[in-house]
Image 1 (cartoon, rainbow, N blue to C red):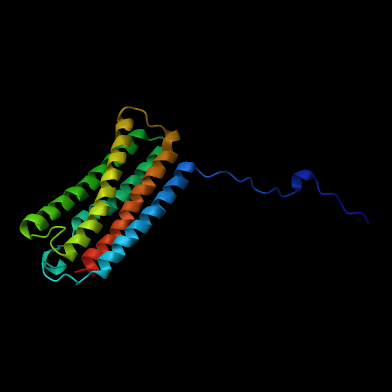
Image 2 (image 1 turned 120 degrees about the vertical axis):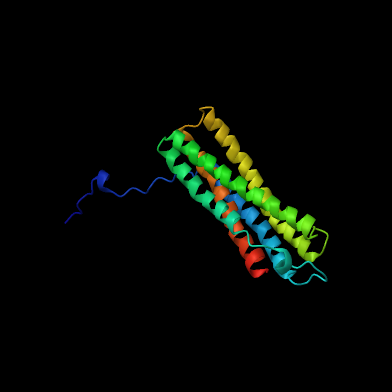
Length: 200
């Protein structure tokens, strides 16, 4: 018996491969590189724990920044809500959640500034005081610099939103930027654990 021919339209066709969004790929590469840098600073901080020849020590001067941490981690929720709003073309809702994200990030930075002010002028801990001061300001300062960069980018998007230039078709770009902010929040979990939990 001869084989029954299968109609062409019934033959399974392989799914067509679509090129991923270049901006997202670039952001993943940036996050990978930045993660390696942070890993080096974290390892250095852990390695030099307790090796300062004189004070002050972490247990003497560090206070756990619970409020600052809550604000920063909450900003990951608000930026996700902003992403969701833009996907559904709710521009005002997007702008509101985006602005709240900036406020939460700014509160975190203000809290960091207040902490550093206390450490420097009240406790006498500077980057040259001892090994703890060097590794602390290097690690926490590295994270703070990333938060500042993130806030500047978020602020630029908010300006475009207020000027009426933000549209639903920009959702993919916004998601790419949000990836960076989520990365900054995730890194803080590591820094918080190493510096304020293990390090004390």
